[in-house]
Length: 302
Length: 247
Image 1: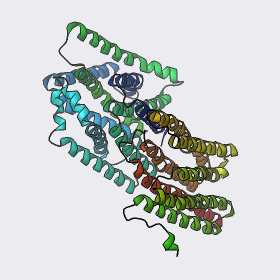
Image 2 (image 1 turned 135 degrees about the vertical axis):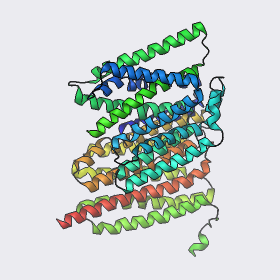
Image 3 (image 1 turned 45 degrees about the vertical axis):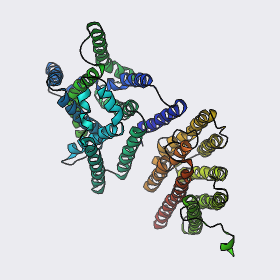
Image 4 (image 1 turned 90 degrees about the vertical axis):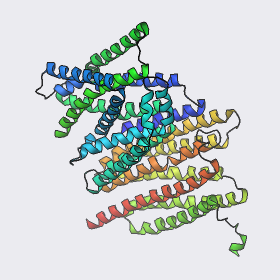
């Protein structure tokens, strides 16, 4: 168990205590807490994609930014053509990204490592969705433009993904352990973490569950990896300098978000806040996950 | 004669059955650790004695708890906490004894003993002095949080803090692996206790699990944790003693 997992356990205990005392935590408070944590840790973890990608790369800054924003525009266009397929693509893309960030640092040298990354993420997302199916289905159905997303809860697709991905990921971990591609320690920690995520997703509401994972087991972990990589590349890097590196794009993202909220209030734009949030996160996630794949290739190559 | 004075255990009384099983298993483990003291190097004898004491003390309490449960049908909270308050600090002593050669100080020993005692005293107040009614939940949560602070301190110390660092410093793979195994017991095995605490009246999980059935889980977890803890210590002691002999 590392420090982040320890912090995760402590936070789970605290939230469980608050739930016991108050019986519930209101949606408003859940959203408030979640937003604060996502702004502090979630957005910044993807705010230095440019620096990470361009370090030790032959690509020029201009081309990088052009490709970065072009991919975002293309994805926006895809959302315009087919929201449902865009949403499903978003889920699988996020699944791969989460799996990659979870398992990349073990530098697993097998041909199907990328498949394992995807399956790990599918297990994570399907577990989150299955345990909170009713809550999510109600949420999607509460807006006209997101109601067709609840199709994922029909035809037992989610059940199939949940059972098969969890089964395959445990099997894959066993395979890696038996073939000595990961140590016993890594095997136990990964298995423990899967069980912990199941417990968390089962007992807490979806917003809290996802925020806990996204902030403590993903974003902060990635921020630490980024810091440790840049420490070798930028002489005299300290926390303040690192925060200064993270600040520009974090603030820019927040700025655009606030601008949109203001515009949508003034001009009554025909899109729900939920769909806007999903689209915003997804179009940021696409270039971010591509940049991170390149980043993990670099650190594993070292 | 003995059978005639014993309360019979109904076939579906799993609580009493696991108390009985726990008693037998811990008694047997106690004898094993005590006898095996003779097979290990001098510096490991104390560790095995402590292991024997942990399971021995638990065996005596399980004997009483089984009788209490059969006679009253109630959960023997008092006896359970008396058992824990004696055995859990002793389990913390094991961490000190294992890392002593790498430089563990008495200060570490006392910190772990204090944290474990704090954890149990707060847990006992939370469980045994619950006023019931409207105040039940706030009482349970307040003492639960205070108790958890002790648990988290131990968890931190053995996984990330002083004990983990000392094990790393020990230059012995056996001790490193052994301390890590014991740390897993604290993380996974001991997690049953806060879960059990949350299952009692007024607790968050009381609607999920019947408070009466938690005794079965406590009994199974106790047996695994205490005997398992001792077996890990035994494995380290034997392995290190053999190394000593080979040199």
